[in-house]
Structures are given as C-alpha cells and as structure tokens.
Length: 199
Figure 1 (cartoon, rainbow, N blue to C red):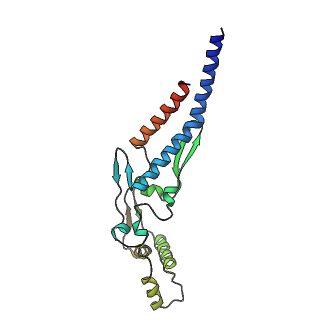
Figure 2 (cartoon, one colour):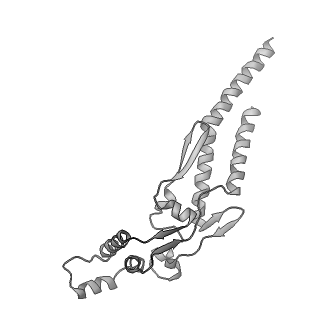
Figure 3 (cartoon, rainbow, N blue to C red):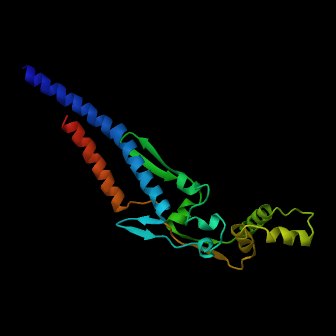
C-alpha cells in the first residue's frame, strides 16, 4: 500500500512539474532561444534557415565610404534599434516573439512604398537637421555645410528630390520559422521533459 501511495505522490509531483514546465519554464527558454537566433541573423547579415542566405548589400555598403556607418552590415547601425527591439513575451503555455518597430515588417517581408509629398517633406527636414542648415544661412554657407555632411546623411536629399513614385525595399528576413530554430526548440523541449521524467 505504501508503494502505491508513493507512486501516486510521484505522479502528482511530476504532473505539477510538467505544468510548471509548460506554463513557465518552456516559454522563457524557447523565447530566449528565438531572440538569440533572430539577433544572430543581424550579426551574420542574412537569414539562417537550412544554412545562411546573405541579405542584399545596401548602397551604403557599396559606396565604400570610410565613415563608420558604411562599415555596418544591412539593417545594422551604431544603435542597432531594429535588432534590439526583438523581444520575447512569455505567457502560460506560450511565448510571443515580436518586434514593435514600425518599419520592421517592411524589412522582414520586403515592400514597395509610395513616395508621398509628406515623406519628401520629412526627408528635407532630416537633411537640413543633419547638415545643420538654418533658415537665415546664405547659399554659400549652405553649400559649405552640405559639403561637410556625412555621406550617409546625404541620402535624405536624394529621397527629397527623387522623381520616383515608389521605393522598393528588398526583403531582408530576420524573423520567421527557420529549421534551425525549430530543431533548437525541439531539443529544449526534449531535454526539459527528460529531466522531469527521469527524476
């Protein structure tokens, strides 16, 4: 009778451990693994799914400039805002991986965007801000300030003056369901299950 009660107690304990695993442990571990995997895509400059598929290089990289910005890979900058905005939100029995940066879907999925007058106005403001051009500056002073601008800041003027009605943003996928991550999640689940079942 004591062995039967011990068996029941062990089963109850394992049931509680399995519930905790499903509701607390796995969402955190799987979420952390996913965030690490997606950030790895940024560091390697491509999409890891059955091997690395490199992202299309940017004009900034192709220009071969000597500025710090031209040394960063696609989707990277000194602030790494897009990469650092990937977060895991664990909940009971689930985890949500998200990136709340407004332009994240455009890069992840690719996009064709209509150039509006409002966008051109924004580009002019960014250009004047980067060049430190003020309203009262003479044309000579404006030219001097523009000449001393960083190469990557000049793209704002290009956007403001573009004749194109549409801009194409190539797909540089960094989030999704890659095989490597699926395999890693499977490994985490099996390892954690075995810890409970073999204890």
